[in-house]
Amino acid sequence: MLKRLLITQKLPDRVIEAARDSFDVEARQAGGVLSAEELRWALRGFDAVLPTLGDVFSAEVFADVPKPRARILANFGVGYNHIDVAAAGAAGVVVSNTPGAVTDATADIAMTLILMSCRRAAEGERLVRAGQWTGWTPVQMLGQHVTGRTVGIVGMGRIGQAIARRCHYGFNMPVAYVNRSARDLDFPATRYDTVQDLAAQVDILVAATPGGAETYHLFDASVFAAMKPTAHFVNISRGEVVDEAALIAALQDNAIGGVGLDVYEQEPHVPEALRVLDNATLLPHLGTAALEVRENMGMMAVDNLRAFFDGKEPPNRV
View 1 (cartoon, rainbow, N blue to C red):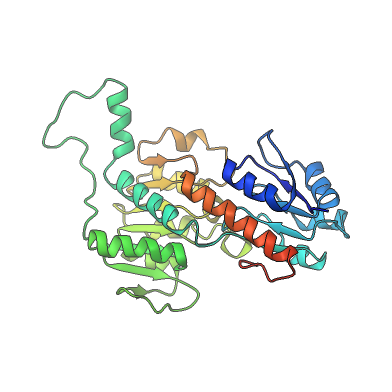
View 2 (tube, rainbow, N blue to C red):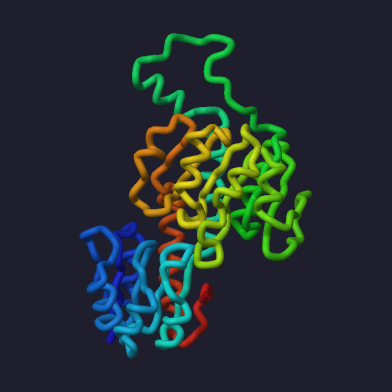
């Protein structure tokens, strides 16, 4: 008999078909994250769950289902801070994720935000769409040149390194970074001890760190105060790594040059105070939003599930 698998969100057809080849699949079509009741139902009623960002399998959920039927949560995505891995392990549940598949796509979005924020592209598009553009002049919408500027990256993992390579090789940008340990990199880079020290030295500061308790509000008022008034901040990691209120205050005071965001602290809620700012470039979590990438993520999750139920170690166990 096939193992029962719950897929919590609508995924590309290729992924669903691959999952159905190996599992008895129930694929939710309603959209939206699992409710508190559904989280517990998923653990009780299925042998495996393929969850996504926002499906919060917390310690409280596992406390309510101490002996779940589910034996593996094959997360769709590289970030898994919405799953309490320790609580899952205590309940005998394995957790896996999908690293690698998202690296280049997320790095591409980081570059998109860097260019859009520094060159005021979103502001310019709004001007054109509103019919308010009066024609080219030598001093219209002067932004910041990106080529040759110093980029600082917080979190030099796969994605951080992919961003750094694009900056260094594509835009001749000096690279600096903060990471828990020094990295053996294939490009020149200067390591700083603290985010504040890094922020004071760079023209563009990029958040590429995992989410979780250790990085909650890592980018706070002290970081924005340390930045140059012309510097830009970009976040493609997790919304909760940023103290959004402090960021809004810095933007309102023109204490920093601008921001490019793909993620938000209370996603999908984006504060109106942020939405009305011309010096904010805001994307709707597009980091991996390409069909090929989402298919690859889904196939990686299915491979983790197949390996687990074949008695093997999942390739991407966390």
